[in-house]
Image (cartoon, rainbow, N blue to C red; front, side):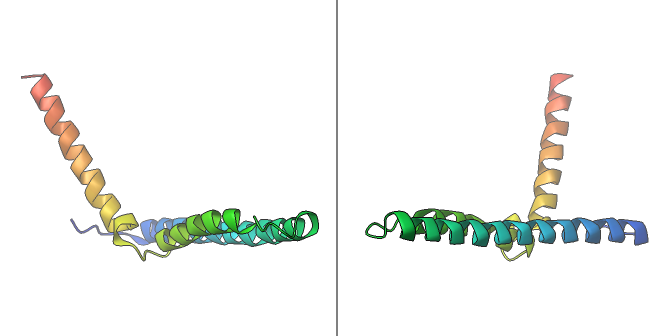
Amino acid sequence: MELNFNEEDRYFSAKKKVEKIKGFYGNLASFLGVNIVLLVINLLTSPEYLWFYWPLMWWGLGVVFHGLKVFDVLPVLGKDWEEKKIKELMEKEKNNNKEKWQ
């Protein structure tokens, strides 16, 4: 299904994309800031046991997936997949409603 967008729709779509990118950069900045603080706390309180890399690793994995989604790198997380899934769910709901009233 190909959609025809007018100028207002394209603007709204671009604005939404920019908000998602802005959210990603906010997440990335928080990730860096908090993990630097955790590193400093770890090195000052218990340098013999390094635990700071656990939140760094797991939150980092989340940041990577967030970036992949925002920049449309993974097709399963992209807009095309969302549109197909929405269409599929709408069709399923339509069929369920028909069956209920027959």
